[in-house]
Image 1 (spheres, one colour):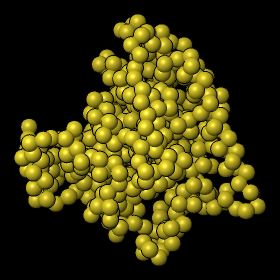
Image 2 (cartoon, one colour; image 1 turned 60 degrees about the vertical axis):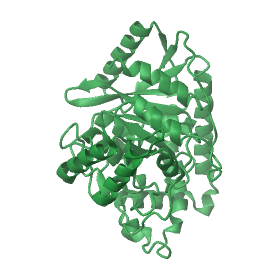
Image 3 (cartoon, rainbow, N blue to C red; image 1 turned 135 degrees about the horizontal axis):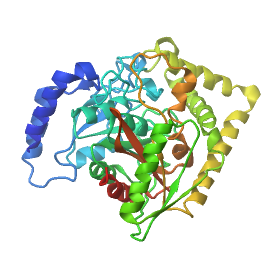
Image 4 (cartoon, rainbow, N blue to C red; image 1 turned 90 degrees about the horizontal axis):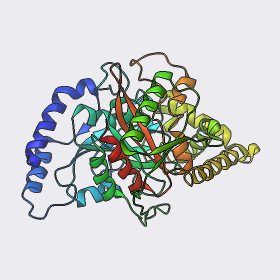
Length: 430
C-alpha cells in the first residue's frame, strides 16, 4: 500500500473514532499530510522507516505542532524545533500524523489526568488505557497509526502497552537521546517506541537509538543474542493479581517447553522499596524542572493552571527539597537506585533475561474511584527497570476475560538488541 493510501485510511479512522478514544489531541491538516505522503511515495531512495505513520506523545517537541504535555499550562506552546528522535524519524522517511494525549506532564498511571480529557482503551471499551503514554498505546491499538513514541519514567510505556494489548519498549537509560523531551525526571526518563509487533518497535528503535551530543547521558550500546540455551529469571513480587501471575507462569512454561530453555526464581534486593524511592526522585526532580514554568516565558504559572496530580508532585518535591533536609531523602533514594542497579547486574550474571507481569492489576472503568495507593501501585513492577537503568519491553501474551495481559521481559543495561531478539522469539508463541 502506498503511503498516501495508508494515510487516507488512518485520517478517516481518526475522524470517525478519535472523538471517543481521544488518543490524538492534535492531527495535522489533511492537505499537508497527504502532500507529504505523496512526496514520500515519489522518492526513489527510501529510508528505513518509509511508509511508517507515527503519532508522537505531546511531551516530545515537533516543530510547529502542539507540545502541551496535555496541560493548560502549555496549551499555547508549539514546538519550535524537532527533538532528536523526531529528526531521525523524518530523516528515514517516517511520517508524523499528529500529537498524542497523555497524563498531564506525564504525571499519572491511568491516562485520566490529561487537561483535554482521558483517553479510552480501544480494546476494553469504557476502561482506562493506562498512562502516562495513554494516547501512544491507544492510537496503536485503535489502528490510528503504525507506531508511536512515548516516554517511560516508571512504566509509562509498558503499563498502557499492557492494558491496550500492544508492544512497548523502554530502552536502557541513555540508549535514546532525550533532547527535545519535556522532562518529568531526567535521571529516569527514557523515550521509546510502541507498535503492534516487536519487529515494528525494533525498526523504530534502530533509527532513534545512539549517542547525541545534545544529551550528555546518551551513549552507543551494542549487544547481540547468544543463540545458546537461555535461562529465564522469574521475579515474583507481592501485590500481583493471582490470575495475572498464574497466566504469566503458564506462559513461561510454554516458552521453556518450546525453546528448551530453563528458569529459576530470582530476587532483587531492595525492590520492595522501589516505589517509595521512585516518588522521592521523581517529585524532587519534577519540582526542579517546573521552576521554568513561572508565568514569564510560557505565559502561565504552573501552580495556577495544573491539575491535582501535578500539583501534588510539585508540592511534595518542594517539601523534599527544603534546605533543612539537606537533600537526605533524595540521596537515600539515589542510594536505593544504585543498589537496584547493582542487583540487576548480579541477577544477569545468573540468567539471560527476567520475566514478570508488566502490570499487577487489570484496567478499571474510566471514572472509577481509586485510592492513591492503588494508583501508584500500578507502576510497581515497571519501576525497578527504570531505577536500574536496564531495558524492558511489554509484549501481549493473551487475555483474561476480555482484558489483555502484558508480559514484561527485562535484560541488562545496554542489552537492548538482545532483548528485542528474545522478544521476537517469545512473541511468536502468543
